[in-house]
Length: 430
Image (cartoon, rainbow, N blue to C red; front, side):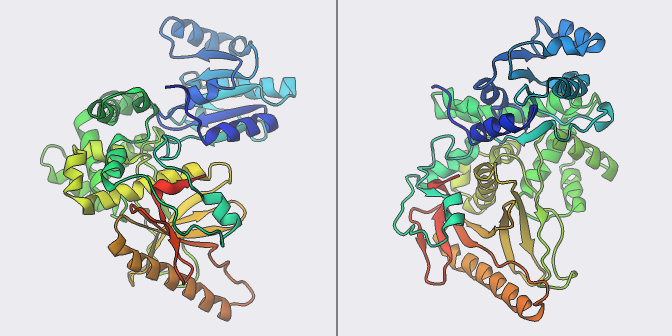
């Protein structure tokens, strides 16, 4: 199979037209290097075993030598030689031309090793594992961004091509590009499992040179997986780790391990949206537990598609993770971010998708059709509260949501009479 187009392709080209360099960061195996190679004119890979020692020695003595080559020049896994960041920034200033370098990295670098932020010279782009549309599983009949531009767009009758069984498999397989060239379904499921195994045995210690225990890493991942798409407190996760009876974990140790997982772009919790429609004490401000890809949770728990088909309640949490990953991918070039809303009265919006221009959508993720009514009711109540607030606070009104969406695992898209849009996840594209 040839190169599958990514939502990052256009964004990368646009950023290269505007900035001297672009940093593509994100988890291992998500396709950063392959995407960068589509536009790079020369490449240097710091983890090339034949050249690694020579590259690192050169970086330590005269890093500018590694920057010579046709542009854009790709420097893959640049974080192995952090000095290259400042070397790239200096060269960008010297050449005064856009599109000089592409840096890729699968773990965050300690900022103390960098002397200049790169502001105005180096743009940052975060890549994720593939969305359903990028992997060819979503038919892409409904454009999310077109919906924002035209909320009255007729979506009635648009159908998904995916069954629940296929959705479950995609959640277990994940969005890893490596699975696209694998023939058997059984082999495709091994990719995420191997990802988790390697992360626990190797990457967790290599990310910053601190030795960490493989078993404890696995137990922390499992505790996170048991609590994904929830607002579980840190104490709950630590207790979950201790309940295994195999390891103990203090709060400082837990923080250290989770911090390393964040550096690896594995854990990516969702922050809370706190509009003034309720008192501050009513809104729950804790983070929603999340992974960069749903397959990490599946692998950490040792689940299979067959098991999840008999545990659809559990798959509901996995399904929400799929929605988070895909919505992030579909709004990559809109300076967007995702939050959640929940209050002590039980009112919630699973996701709040914010675009950089202020527009936003309230989103509920409901796997089955029986849950659609509850999801729609929550969204409509949130909209009503915002309107009530605006009547009282005319000087500083809140923007009303541009879209109310219930994302489902069902077959049919339609707009309800109250304006809530019901859309199968497997119908959406950017």
